[in-house]
Length: 453
Ligand code: GLN
Image (tube, rainbow, N blue to C red):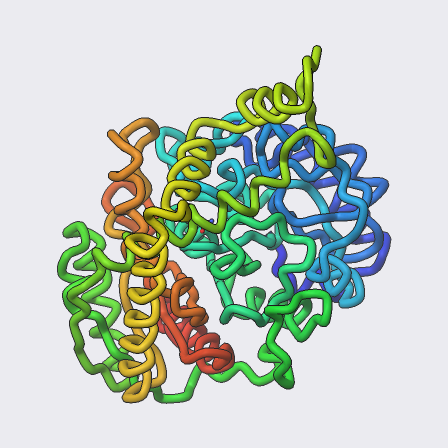
């Protein structure tokens, strides 16, 4: 598949042909389930001029349906473009195709979608990861040049690692959340999935920057990263040794080999341990569920999407609209989130989780005082089979290495480094200081080139 960089040089006519070709291919690969609407002959006419970029179904594109893969938002039409989308359009890109996801971005398998699951293009019995599983599968299978996803606790980096593409979540505040359907507002961040690091930088440059429409957007000078990419900078990298050692043996061995190569190529490697990751998971799930329970209270049949039928009274409408519209995992999180925010339990759970979050943030800041980047696994295993997560809790534990980045607001990227014996992808994760995306992308490019050669 042609890179974004090359595609930006195509003529309008060539781009139209490219879209037709992607459309045809997507229809042929319908079984993969990367897209929610099979492309959407409709999208062909409404996409606008520019290089096609696939969009996760929780980012608003004016005039398109936006459902967050939930029944409750069926037939909801986005009335405006998200800032990320309007920025895309003004930089030579065009939204093209809506990607499948876990309902309201809750999950790590894309099996929690009202529209059915997405398959991993490397092995159809395996999950593509999630929640941006459609965005990752589309890029990894050549059904999209690049895509946008959202990352609340790993949802860009983990599916990229499971499918075998680059997944980049910038620091919190770098990309406007205006027009992103909220899951957990203090953790959510739009991110990019691409075929390679340079394309990820190009797409990030197109959509990042301060936005007065998002009160959490960071008002810092934004300097484009792609023109300054430098794979030859020698960096000081802290490896989280116990995370690498605890990963599955094939993941561990691939990462150890990668670390050795980074060293040979002149990067300085130091080792540290992080022993409290159980707190990360507990703090993350308490905060995410609490925020989700309030964010999702707006879906009550009054303003957005679907309303139940044969209404008896207002209360009946609220209850049945929500009971019929939300899937099981979403209901579980609304219930738990409401519980941890209730007056008797607020201090014991929510406040405690916020304290843990501050503690985790301080820990990462301390580590990053001594180095340029942190290196760790993205996931403990390669892509797992469908229906192997025995309980929700087992699923939550899979997120051990991705959620701290969201709790701390730092930037991170996952880069493919190897395949396991079954041909499944293994990626490494790099984490940077807040807003130091340039160093992150420089390190990722260096890693990518070292692996290629
Ligand atoms: N797997 C995590 C969750 O279910 C992260 C999801 C995400 O980043 N959107 O909350």
